[in-house]
Amino acid sequence: MKSAIDFETYLAITQLHAAYASAVDANDWDRWTELFVDDCIYRIQPRENYERGFPLATLSLESKGMLKDRAYGIRETLFHDPYYQRHVVSAPNIISATADRIECEANYVVIRTKLSELSTVFNVGRYVDSIVRTSEGLRLAKRICVYDSEMIPNSIIYPI
Amino acid sequence: MNIGNESIQRRENTPWNSEGTSRIPFRVYTDAELHQRELDAFFYRNHWCYVGLEAEIPNVGDFKRTAIGERSVVMSRADDGSVHVFENVCAHRGMQFCRERHGNKKEFVCPYHQWSYTLKGDLQGVPFRRGVKQDGKVNGGMPADFKTEENGLTKLRVATRGGVVFATFDHAMESFENFVGETILHYFDRMFDGRKLKILGYNRQRIPGNWKLMQENIKDPYHPGLLHTWFVTFGLWRADNKSALKMDKHFRHASMISERGNAQAANDVSKVSSFKESMKLHDPRFLDIVPETWWNGPTAVMTTLFPSVILQQQVNSVSTRHIQPRGNGEFDFVWTHFGYEDDTPEMTERRLRQSNLFGPAGFVSADDGEVIELSQKGFEQKPEHRALAELGGRDVGDTDHMVTETLIRGMYAYWRKVMQQ
Image 1 (cartoon, helix red, strand yellow):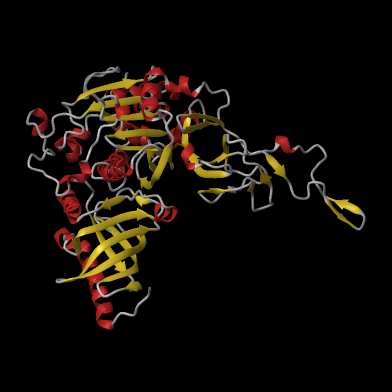
Image 2 (tube, chains in turn yellow, cyan):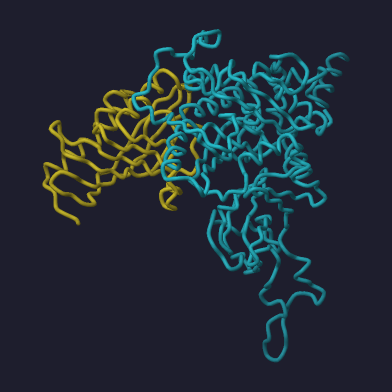
């Protein structure tokens, strides 16, 4: 059911998107994990799997603990060529809203810049989100990054 | 200068200037002409190449577009249930007619002039074949001796075993079983034991490195316990695990077999810098490993079938990894994760959770793509140099440990024989 939300809520959703992009583009993985509730889902999933009903995701995290494990992995255990990423996120499209839960989507583009290299389009898709109200403000209960990009340019290390 | 000319000529004829295969010339990764010869010798002749899983095309009319080497092919299921593979090039004007990657069709029609083909790749319809009547005369049409049966798509020979589909352009090819050989077939059958497979999904990555580097990566048991922190720290793959390396008689295929050891025990292995003694997971469900009866012991068996595919069992995570070259410096790597028809919902969930270790974002496998890319960069900057693969000696043979690069030497012994280098 589609319900109207007030401007203040829409602004808060937009601010959550901006805070998210800011955290992941600054490599601030602690700030990234804190944008989620404890019992959360985070996935990076090819559009192909999403639309054909295949459950496999390129990365599938099912709790804030798993997000923290990913953050640790990025910092300590995964070898990778260093890179910057830069997110551009569209205005959110509100699918439905109740008093404490909002289902919405937003398009994103992630541009990757490797050291001494040109900037290239890295991953393109849309966020499929469930956002909940908490005492600390809006938080993500679910974020699925459904990506169009048919080929991953080698590997994905950082969260999208 | 004579000497200079001679050495240049020698380099042009063969990249190898030493006996054996413990020194691998960078040129085998950087030379575009050699790459063309490899495609012909390994992907288009004399080898069974991976195409897909029968579970991807369960129903009559189902199809999947994929690739063998750099040639686009289509796998389809015909009315009688049989599996067919044909080249995605129209017999008329050569158009790559199949653009969808999967779907269901009654026939294949090339949009350009509407030549139509059966699900087996036979030509069935040619518009205006008998010409077009106008003012009492027949205009055009195909010559009287044109035969549809002589103008079908290029059909490949197909072999299926345990629900896995292989194909070859080479109709004089030996059987799939002979090609794989008894030793490796044992490990193939262990994973594909006749149970129906259930597709869990795909991951696709493009890796900027030579395709052979991925074969070598899975023939190299030296690196996993060093590069991959998760493997060494949680005992999934480390140099002191009980293990074995086995090859077919030509040394082209191999299985790396390992049994999970004493995680986080201190010894020589735990002195490597990637070992993290105090590492604990916030959410241990990543490693909620439940042994399955079909394992018969080993917790990991990684099989390389040369040249086209890797078969992965890493604890509860199983997948095929398809190698599709794109020139000498790049390949597409397509992962198909699956489960078995008798999996409980909990087992499916477990396979999916553990798949976080693998694939293009995997806690373990993401590293592999990165080191392959950077190896290729190293080769490109000094193609006259060579790599070294001398751990465990300079010869080739099966071992009962993993502190060796024998499988890489084996693969290049086969490569040298086939490429006459």
